[in-house]
Image (cartoon, rainbow, N blue to C red; front, side, top):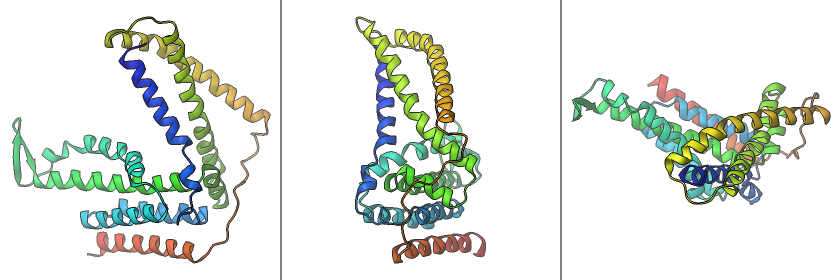
Length: 270
């Protein structure tokens, strides 16, 4: 599988591994890095909930500005934040794109006999903006808080143990998943000479898909047995360093509460 498919698999696997392993931003001296992880989870999660509640583009853009300010105060590169947050809203825009012609309204342009309405365009833009801002806010948690601290904060907030286990095991298993993918591609490339085309690449991909599925299932079983052998039957204990709540934590929580109130008033009070 030395063609386009192999290069695509290697590029995607490398990018995803960098996505999950890049925590050096969390080691910087920024606003969110200095906050208690419990406050960060609740406050930033509250801001994301407020974004999902809003139904106006102006309020959504206001929350987008708040996200940019938090990123700047936390020494998070805006380019990296945008790169991490762009895939989900773009996919969401493709999903809701038919609403541009399905929603009734004033027709702006006709495409292949279908009328694109102003209400449909407004809905697609608002939906995409909401998803983009919400994903960017949640990405701030990942970028500014180590994953171990996130798990510890979830346990201290009395999140159900089963849910914490799901996050912990998924995070750990993704590393093995991507590593297994790259090993299969490397093994196949080392036994192939010459450059294959797209058709040959897809043929190799079909042949390797079954092997990859079996190996990932086997690796998952081995991960489970290893966790049980190391005391995995017990619930995960919080091992992050607990911080004292200071004025910055209260300010962040106040911003989140104000955002929820504003979103609720704009949606249901006006």
